[in-house]
Image (cartoon, rainbow, N blue to C red; front, side, top):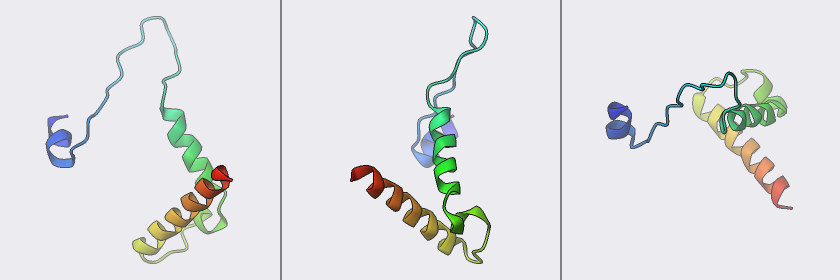
Length: 72
């Protein structure tokens, strides 16, 4: 955790063990939902891009489109 804090400037939150059995954690579903939204874009459904920069830009376009759809 110290490495991540010093190198990346990020704070890690490690969940504690749940004592009463099974429980849903608060944030992991947000990541899965985001991947599902990105999977709906045909260009992102397969690995068509040769350059990683192009693939990164396609992800930005997809998230921009999703953001604009939520605004209006």
